[in-house]
Image (cartoon, rainbow, N blue to C red; front, side, top):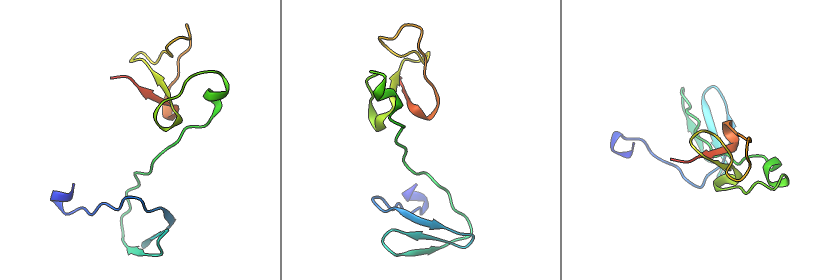
Length: 85
């Protein structure tokens, strides 16, 4: 992306998105007409309370068929999982 002129801003939060700008946690304002959001995600802690071990981002590690290892008949999907490759 950088080779195409895209500037990546890491370690900065977004405080506000409006029709003509994005306000960063640093106080910097980026004037824009188009905003593409690629924010991080941390899953809800529900799976931790059920005794299911979580992986990256607090998400449940599942097999390629969405099954949860060690829990026969249990499947998980969506933003709460990391899918095995």
